[in-house]
Length: 476
Image (cartoon, rainbow, N blue to C red):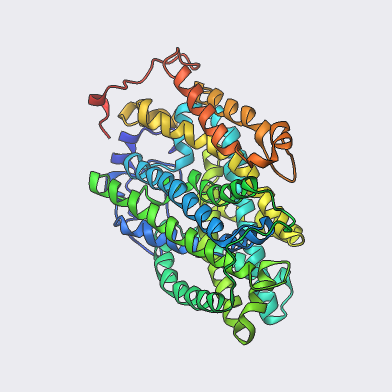
């Protein structure tokens, strides 16, 4: 029986591959259930992993856009904090799900959506997002190195990608180890940048009605949505980095709080830093603004940006490779890593010009599909009987082609499209009422949850009998 069709119980007996906490052995697991004997680590590792991933310049780029909307400083900070609280709480819950179920996040989607049904969101949301986010981060890091050294962008970005490929191939343990080390290194660099930005920045607490994107409350909602969607974009990967933790109530709680706090602290910090950065300069792009702001210390600032590209891209590349396996493509995890790296490198070369506008459009499109997907996963975990042995085994059953969760996800995406507000596509409701901002994430999640509850007790589309949803059956 192949690992992809093997049950959780069979894995726990037959699939001890001696990985444990090795930093040099190539991770032997991909989408398989992690057996109890291989469970290791502490919940605090989730804090360092997500704290390091959040100390990254794309969040600063989002904060930089506060000046475009003409937002007063207090309004920008309020949007960032509220987005951080709500989205980070969701990440924490999804991370706890990984501890309990022991499988990657996108594999969990096979439960409510079915094997074929899960391919659609995984192919777009996870593979596309993994490649896209890796390219976004390489662009910023490559630009920083190019400004520092006069090395051509194609060379600087290639150097970054080769290093990221090597780490992602080795896998889970090395990623956690390096994220912990880089947390301490990067915090020093970003504290220095923050001090310089605070000393030179202007705190303007009145709206700038002459700003090109000024739209009152609508601009604030869009700004909030960008920060909210930044964390939402991580949600299909949250369980990937907690699934090796031993499944105990304490570890589930600890992983949840550690994941939430790591994401919240860095989103708020980097977001406010970007807001200050945007107020200090006339440069049109965030990397140029950082160089201008840092003055004689520009090399330090740009070096920090280049180094921070690793902490996010280790996760982007690793998660993208898991997604390819989830689609049923018969490749090893390390082969999928190579594909993600090569694809994202060429996307970075193609997309390096006009980066800022392309970045926000990409961010929106991924979040539009992720929000309803996550809503279905959480509903299924809580109310669909997924926390049972049979519920876990179903994730590896390719005979279940479609389930009602796919209908819920598709309805969430489709019925939220009139609210989409993107440079690529603006829905009719968003176009008619721009003052209300971009509400599509919330509409999509609410519709998906509503359709899930309306259908989850109906006869299954696969024809199989329903799972036992009683509290007594929740044995995992």
